[in-house]
Amino acid sequence: MKSNKNPSLVIITNLYPLPWEPNRATFNKQQFELLKDDYDLSILIPVAFVDYFKHRKHIKQSTNIRYVPYFYLPKIGRRFYSVTLFLSILIHSGLWLKKRKPSTIMASWAFPEAVAASWLSRLYKAKFFFKVHGSDINLHGKIPARAKQILSAAKKSQGILSVSKALANELFAMGVNKDAVHVIYNGVCHDKFGLSYPAKKGGDYILYIGNLKRDKGVMELIEGFNQIKAQHPNLSLVFAGSGLMLDTLANYVNTHSLSERVTFLGNVPHHELPAWLANAKALCLPSYNEGVPNVVLESMAAGTPILATSVGGIPEVVDENICGKLIPPKDVNAVANGLNELLTSQFSRDKIKQHAAQFTWQKNKTQLINMLKGDVH
Image (cartoon, rainbow, N blue to C red; front, side, top):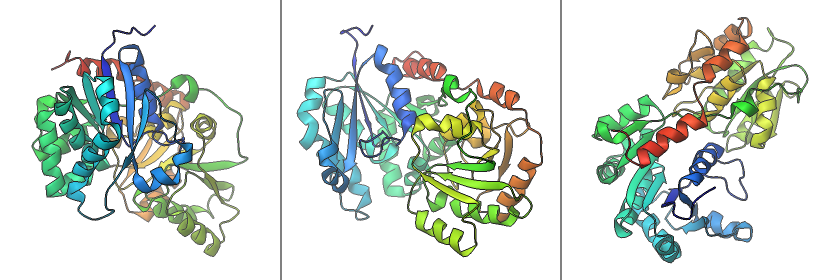
């Protein structure tokens, strides 16, 4: 049972489920909830002010979960987003933070969250850590004005959690001290994803799970699938997720007579994903950039082969000799050829599961708490 004497930890992150987006960043929710036995945990969630007021009737503030309307000018003066986030948090939740008396403040996203959190930690005299995911460094870290702020925050931090070695190397290239960075892979719920489930769909299918964005490689996926559809007449493609590319994908389906072969599920509750993964022929994730997507770990835990791009930390966790195939990004032919190779190869689901067994939330928790308590370098 949690002790009332546990130190207060406040995590600031935009990557967290929202009342109107319950499937958003479930991996962060799973990770942070592991800390409740050791910390008096609170989550501070910045929400773009337009979305905040649009969904204000769904927002319920509590002692430990706090939503903050984040004011900024879209696409204008992005170098100042950290300042506007800092002020938004202070104006809306400054007193709440004071009452929480945080001994530690941790941000989950480098810019602007980690930058604003570094200032807040100084104001509230708290230790400061942050977690980097992928795009926050691969994108913002390439913009000099933002990279300078991230580096400044890194110098003030007591530790930085990187979800992959590749991302850690990006931090080092920016000038971040190597001793400050801790590579901690996310975990997966093997007791859920490692089980057998009745099929939710008849026939063989390739599964995509994620945001329907161009840089997730969704166009390469559907075009690659179109190239091989004649060779695999009983195979279908299933998209689980929503996003800006939905209409573009739907138009492609209509113009290429794929309506009988492609299914759009929309957002699928996280607890339903194990069944979809367990019965898929393969998971396909042809992203342009990634950290270590949890869906890859979940697919391996389910014993399902993977076709993914060799970007970010994916090559660190996917063993091609056991788990599937890695391909270059932005290459339709590579997707088509990769799918053909997966579909005509024999993969041992048991061996894939055994490989995935090294990625556990308990291991993640131990490493994270060691970082927060300063028990590692």
